[in-house]
Amino acid sequence: MKFTKSGGKTFAAPEPQFTGVAYIDPVLSPNEHTALRCAHVRFAPGARTAWHHHPKGQALYVTEGIGLVGTRGGVQEIRPGDVVFIEPGEEHWHGATADRFMAHIALQEADENGEVVTWLERVTDDEYNG
Image 1 (cartoon, rainbow, N blue to C red):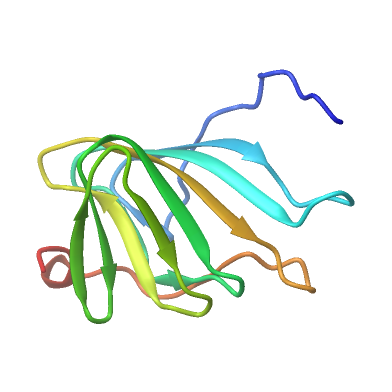
Image 2: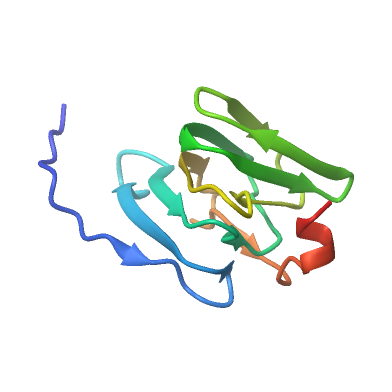
């Protein structure tokens, strides 16, 4: 067992992978013992990720607020307690609604090359608005 005390630094979500104001609290990074990456991500109203995909998929657990998750096929509202599993390689984005904050725990597994995400283009306002 490995115990890590709280103390990781919150950082602003980087551009161009995010639109708007979002903050990331790292929880776990891939290392010699695990391929998992985990983060608590908080989005201000209107903030969202860019389009992206994960080689091993991604699980999102919504902890507060109201958000959106979009695929090339459409947009779904997400609320506290909802769990979303995005299939490996599925292009998607996620973020807050225009008038509410949203936070989620994001979990993804690194592939054999240590990669957890491939970032694509920004989500347009038309795509965000569904």
